[in-house]
Image (cartoon, rainbow, N blue to C red; front, side, top):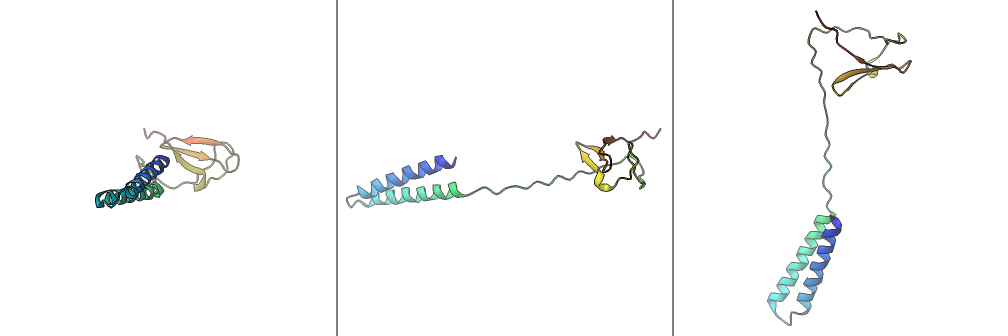
Length: 113
């Protein structure tokens, strides 16, 4: 896209130069040439501008169906105590990565019935 704008600006600047050089005292041709130079400058300015990068923050909230009490979580494989760093949410599911044995598994809520 930038290359196209630069080429168009160069063509406008060249045509503006041709209008001013061949004006032979005609004010209208000088005005048109200056307008073409201004348009070429505007195109170069827009080509050099970079769009602002947008930052998107994604916040995932988990809605639990019942009362929740804080308990110590232990790894199913090695029995090591897991910290909050071991728990992550991916695609709406809760995953546990054991820091001790490297086991990864998904936490599932047991039915209340």
